[in-house]
Length: 450
Ligand SMILES: *[C@@H]1O[C@H](CO)[C@@H](O)[C@H](O)[C@H]1NC(C)=O
Ligand SMILES: *[C@@H]1O[C@H](CO)[C@@H](O)[C@H](O)[C@H]1NC(C)=O
Image 1: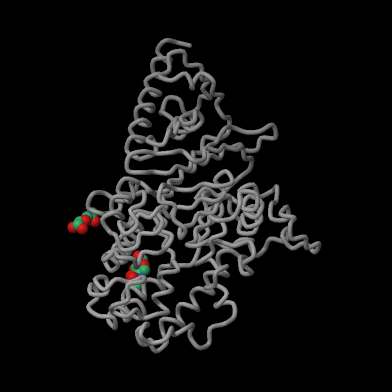
Image 2: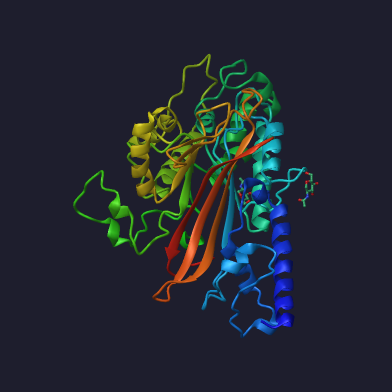
């Protein structure tokens, strides 16, 4: 190789190397042992070909490259248009009225800056419900902040996904008495002015309207854009593969189609849990969210019951359907605790069934706290992120971070594009980070990349 050419190549690589390093330092990614795969660096190079090299297919043998990874990379032949795709998701569990701790968590996870404004570091911020109640007085501020973040995120192409917890629904059912201390504290009620004002705000007022418009019971969040926007239902309506007659409950294979290797490259989020025995899992998440939406609307639009206690528990509204009642019972998505309490043997068998049916690879939930940290079970298929963030519990301040990358690695023998799909799932804390999952798999095919 001519010395001049070698010099030019090395300079390009060096520049890219530092650009990449800099990029990583800008995001929390580097703090998570996030090793840049060689192919990602390569793809960065080929996606921005320097003028002089455009019609050369460079044989990359860089003896003096900044990192030895370059020496082993074989350049892909036809993938000049293929660039790596990355998606960064941050999820946070139960907040229970504590905006100070919520700000700490969202800040150290890179979702917001020190002013509480959206930074753009995360593509998705997910909150799994239970913002209201329990000795925290910041209910109003937290819900308003979430709407501000939702708008700021949207302005930069980000998304905030909000979920209703059992406490939001409980409050929509019951008008708490001013001296009720079981869930709602008098000081919190005072921030609304009165019991009646509080009830108005969470039914037809600003917070209640936000719940109805911008909160769901559950969501399916694609890691790969090929699956479409969040909450694209699974199974897809036109998918004949899943309609088999030999209805064997335990045979999950029908949900996996070799021609759709990314069909489950998604995550589910819910407050309590998606029970394997819950009857309305599919199509996911549309069925559950439709039930939740009609149920909430009945709660918010009824004549609001008098405070309980001293008045009797008002119960579910007139006209609640059996399916809506089931949605709110102990086996339903707002309350289910089986993923936290079941034995490892049982949970790890059951979880595969739910993942297969919901078109997801992991399910992430709050509701059942572990004050020491985020709980991962069955190799990260079950992740429980309620760590008692509110000072009312004094648990660990935590956030879950998911870095997804989809990197071109040339073509297979038939000339089909090959990719590496990688998920790095980490638990973030004030003073440390732990990698929960770092998984990679090879994928072949053509995919929608936006
Ligand atoms: C950030 O937050 C501050 C304080 O809430 C606000 O005044 C400011 O306009 C925000 N900046 C942006 C860019 O949204
Ligand atoms: C729901 O979110 C959208 C998008 O940010 C916003 O325009 C709208 O005002 C929100 N709805 C409520 C009731 O806050």
